[in-house]
Length: 464
Image (cartoon, rainbow, N blue to C red; front, side, top):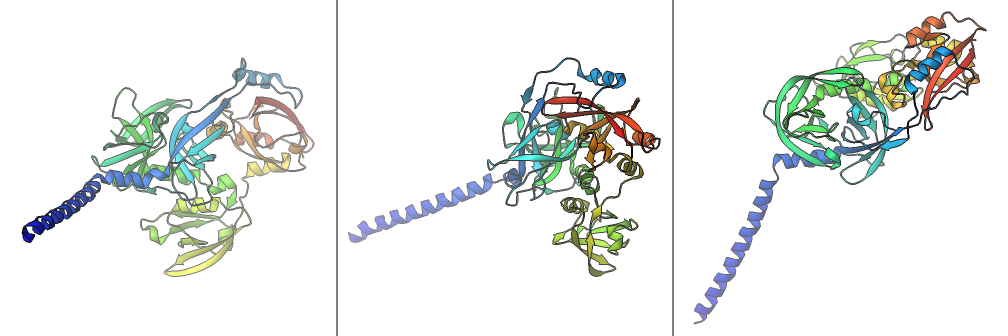
């Protein structure tokens, strides 16, 4: 009797344990099957996706006479664009971007942030940052932003578009219609597509685009297109409004080429290193020095053609983008510690950065007027809220105690007239600078924008 009572009880207990174990194993197995490669890729990339909102101030236009009288030619030029006043308003367009390194550099489409007076970036953890524009290029539709964080930021690993395969799974992430942290999946439908879009700069042709059927909606622009390994293979750029399941992305290798130009420290920070470099197929070798400018910081540090730069300070240099990004943070006068490989031997040397020398025309503008100048590019015009100025010479800095400083010229002003001549670029300004003699008085027509609107002014400057 005891056996007949005890055995069923033991049997019941054993069956319960077996059932519980099976249930637990089944749950683990189920969870494992749900964590597909797509899920893993999204987990890798999601924290690095930037949801971008911008404020654009369309302000009332003013004619500001604080420089004195205006010529009829300049007045006509200004009025061509200004007509009736416009009411102030703020827009909040939405777009996407992707963080490409732990220091907070973000890649997005130029049209997402064009003419923005304020850029807000929100990450998947809910934290929001105000971003600054580093540089942009409307022709390639690329822009670089920067956010600052006290801790390293998550970033996406750059892949390559050289080995992409028709039919492989791709994932598009972004901020479509303001719906943050959205994910769509599909396949890579085609590569090397050529598409054409109309823009305010005229018709723009994009070559070598990636086509995908992963849904790309308004707001996805600037966001990442990644492969199943979570590597960046493109930046979402465009959709075909008349069709579903047809979207386009800028391939990552083209993105990288554009970023090298957008991170150009000599143009952005006026810093001179003095060596030209090229990338190698084997990134572990560093970057190869292909030429060295005479009397440059690199020349003085005895860097030679054929050297491989493998490290700057404690930063490994794997490609030109690493090189440009690192030096962009530095200023003239700072010392860098360079590790190079020369014929199989690792050498260490110091280099002190210098201010980039001025080309002849820019040097003449500084000597005669006290102005640091550069061409007004479309992207600079947008950043300065001077979208209506298609060409001119931007004043980037004014020398203290100079003729320009004495009449109130400031950085951000754009020269559009010198005397009776319309000025479109630095080269045209240079032709007139050569005519200017010490003691001459020349009239400069200036336009600029601030929080009160767009303005014009006229300055009489004494040539030194």
